[in-house]
Length: 431
Ligand SMILES: Nc1nc2c(ncn2[C@@H]2O[C@H](COP(=O)(O)OP(=O)(O)OP(=O)(O)O)[C@@H](O)[C@H]2O)c(=O)[nH]1
Ligand SMILES: [Mg+2]
Image 1 (cartoon, rainbow, N blue to C red):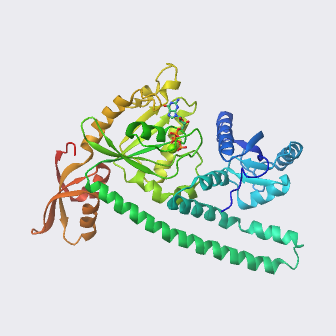
Image 2: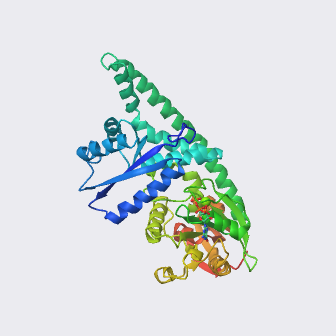
Image 3: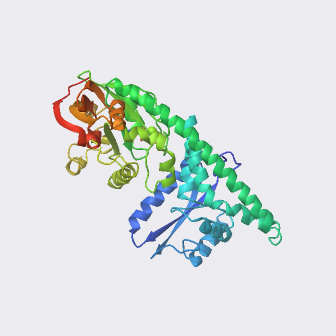
């Protein structure tokens, strides 16, 4: 799909940003969010030449901001030769249409900008499929826009039928493509799940690195495992997960996965589309939540990451908080240690704190799988199959009234098997 912002054009696109200060937000949040939007626009290859905000009780139905304000911004944009206006919040299809009319130039929202960056960055087949799915799902309700342009060009009256037919055809084509991608992604998801089961049979606990975009996740994976994942000072440098084996000081092995970063206001459709990738996070035994400790909004970023974790169903997983970039703190306090007990401070760049992180990992992954004695009715075949898939069955006995197992089960799945657990046998040591 064509990129919305291209660096290939003769000159860099001149971008104007618009934010609103809703009653539910404070001015500072709006500013932070706009600054981040500006980074996103630069990552996409644009040049931000200005921004504007408006205080509102609630978004205006037709144009998101007040129409007077929109006119004022539009005049300013014409004077400063702006090519693209980007709103910090998601616009409805009707709002984008109306705003394009007012501004008489391309109007994007935060979601389409993020989608655009993802599209530019996708490398693997899986990544490309996921991003195309997200783009098409975002496009579908907006397809009327094309009909709008068509009817305007051709005078409207008399063209309606044609436009409508064209629109229906477009819609059907998009829907067909969505269905096809969804099928292909299901295949990818199954392959991943098979790979993961293979790894789980190795008895190696799975740890997933999660965190806000640009927190230093890839740099940390590289520092810990000697991997060479691209790390750069751009948002969403990583899209595709990479897994490496990490040998802890006690010789315990852990599989460490680096994956896509999160951001606030991450479009729900994108989270949905990235299910195959994010499954690595959902299935992990332990999360390493990496935070850029030097970032002024570190706490807000932690919250944003936690809400995405909620959204993908990874709530309540054992999590080790890793405060990165301590080299940039210049000694002014590791105050996060008070707010996040058990957190570790590191610098993936200088290596400071990495031994402590390894030690903490060691103690956290030790009890990751525990021996359980389970008793399952013979007819609960699905439970028995699941137990074999996610656990390690050490002993089994199908002779009795119920099937009996001795197995290791990752702690976050204990609840699922709770009705069948007879007792916990012992804490397993290192694999
Ligand atoms: N000073 C300092 N910079 C760091 C540290 N860790 C990472 N960085 C820098 O932070 C930037 C982002 O690092 P990445 O490892 O790409 O971050 P990421 O979390 O993988 O980012 P995405 O994949 O884009 O979500 C890069 O410019 C790194 O060099 C650190 O400990 N100290
Ligand atoms: Mg990365």
